Structure formats: structure tokens, C-alpha cells
Image (tube, rainbow, N blue to C red; front, side, top):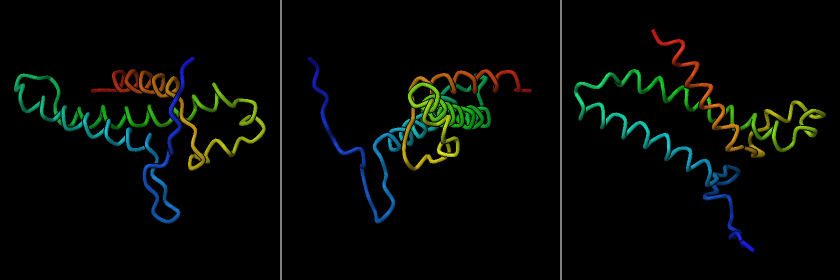
Length: 118
């Protein structure tokens, strides 16, 4: 039997503002993407990637992971609840993200980016 640690999901609270651990992980992941990407572009002068392309990929990826993660939570975990309370889908401050939805969202976002590059 596997025992999962019980920890506080809130990393930092300042008054009514709460910063959750998963939000920090998103921020760290996006920061590493942009920092490592810019470093690699600078090191590999013959790369087809430019800083502009990297920024566009990050923008599409952020949209994909956030929107896909939220919609994945809605569709995979609490579909019947959100079917009866559709405005609650936008209540992102109550939490609810899905890895599966985020992955699908990023894949769709990258496909959309690839089909719209000029």
C-alpha cells in the first residue's frame, strides 16, 4: 500500500492571496523553458529557432497547458457537476487542473502553432 504525504498545497499566503505549489511549478517550468531556450539559441548559431519563435512557442504552450488543464479537469473529473454549473468552469481560483488535459492542450497548441507559422 502506497502512502502519499499530506502537505499544504499553499506555498505562500499574503492576506487573501494564496500561491499554490502547482502554480510555482508552472512558473518555474515556463522560466526554465525560456532561459534554456535562449541559451541554446545563443550557443547554436546555426539553429532555425529564433528568440521570436521561442516566445511564440512559449505563448502557445502556456495557453495550451492552462486552458487544456482546466478543461481536462472539467471533462475528466467533474463533468456532471460542471454540466449543471457551467459558470463554475471559470472559477479558476477554486483550483482544478488536469495533467491529461494540459498535455492534450499543449499538443493541440503546438499543432495549431505549426499550422500557422509563416
